[in-house]
Length: 104
Image (cartoon, rainbow, N blue to C red; front, side, top):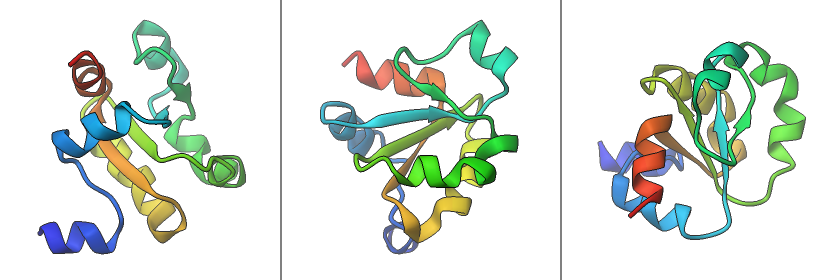
């Protein structure tokens, strides 16, 4: 499984996420605007999954690693599958997981 994740240049390893969170990065939250407004990782950018493909050019313009999060990790996995080999991207799972990892 780890081999397959390396092929797709994505990971959900908390250790890897901690390292990325200590470097220059972008967190994209793919939940709806109303979900995002109820709580989110501070500094994250809200690009709802429904808009993701239409905003792909904007997303690919980011040069730093991207961490994608949502409520549980399911929508972030869909967003990652859209990017595939186009960008270095990490599945942060839930935004709360990303928040917890950034505090350590």
